[in-house]
Structures are given as structure tokens and as C-alpha cells.
Amino acid sequence: MGTQEAQAPDAAVPGVGGGPRPLARPRLYEQLADHIADFIEAQGLAPGDRLPPERRLAKDLGVSRATLSRALVALEVRGRLEVRHGDGAVVRDPAARVALPSLDDAPLHEVVQARAATMTQIALAASAHPDSALRSALLADDGGPRSVEDVWACVLRLVDDGSFLARLDAALAERIRLLGGSPEPAAVRALAESVRRGRPDEVVEAVAAVLRG
Image (cartoon, rainbow, N blue to C red; front, side, top):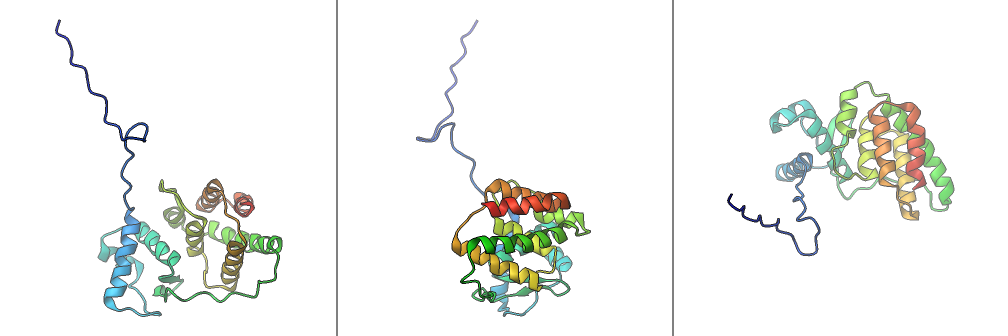
């Protein structure tokens, strides 16, 4: 019987147990967001100009509506676009900021209470959106870490994000950010899931958990 050759152990990276980690690659919607941003610059589009309708844009780019929706959300988070109901995606000035109500003297606990009310109403409206496929496209877990800002931008896409309530919510969020506080990742995931699955009974607790952070 012949002896078997000893197999060499897998190469290991010094200081990293178990070998090298997989190379992180940009997700498709992130690459698409960069491509759209480059298109805006190349075409010289100014604030107020509109992109083509989503259905046509997805076809021209050769991507699904779901991937395009996530790319547009990413550009909204960057302040590059604003997606308006009935108007489509509108180019924004990335340096422009939403005017905030005067909240300078409001204590943190009152700001948190007020934002709990605005977030709850917005999240409930989003969870009742009749297009479950759109809810899933925007809020399904894609395996990557998500910030509350990313998730909330997706939630706002399901409602009228130009309304007074949405603008007030943005002002309250900014004030909380300045005063400190960061939600737990698990709470962010739970909020996304409650809206994605259309579970209004879970929305109130999910909002409260996010704000407890």
C-alpha cells in the first residue's frame, strides 16, 4: 500500500485566524448609484431637472426596477436626488439642506418623544403601502450592514416624503443626531422588517427600540 502525500495546510494570513476573509465588493445598486451620479454630472443636469421615468431608466440601464429603486434611495441619502411622488427623480443641490424648525432649546427627551410620534405615523403609512413587492425591494435584508438613515430613506420612499410630517421628522432626526444617540443594528433591522412585512402591530415597538438607542 502506497503512502499518501501529506497535504499542505491552507495558507494563512499572519494575524488573521482561519485564513483571509472574502474580498468586499460593491453591491450592484451601489455601483448603479455611482453610474447615475456620473451621468448627472456628464449631462450637466442642474437642481430641479428630472431623470427619465423609473420604468424607462431601468430598461435603458439594463437593471431591474428593484435594483434601480435601491440606487435612487442611495442617491437620496447622499442628497443628490429627491424622489417625488408623481414627479419621479429630481436632481438636488447636494449642498442644500432642509430648513429646520427652531429646536435649539428643546431637551433631548422631548425631541425623542416628538420623533417617536412622527416616525410611528410614517412607518405605519409605509407598512400599509399596497405594493408589497416594492416594500420588499426597498427593505429586504441584502446581507450587508444598514444604517438607520439608509432604512429610513427607504421607508420615506413609500410615503409622501415631501409632506410637512416628513420634513418635521427630518428636523427632529437632525436634532437627535446633534445631541447624541445611535440605534442598535438589531433595532434597525427590526424596523425594516416590520415595514417590509406590512406588520403595523410591530411598527410601534420597532420605532421605540430604534429611539431607545
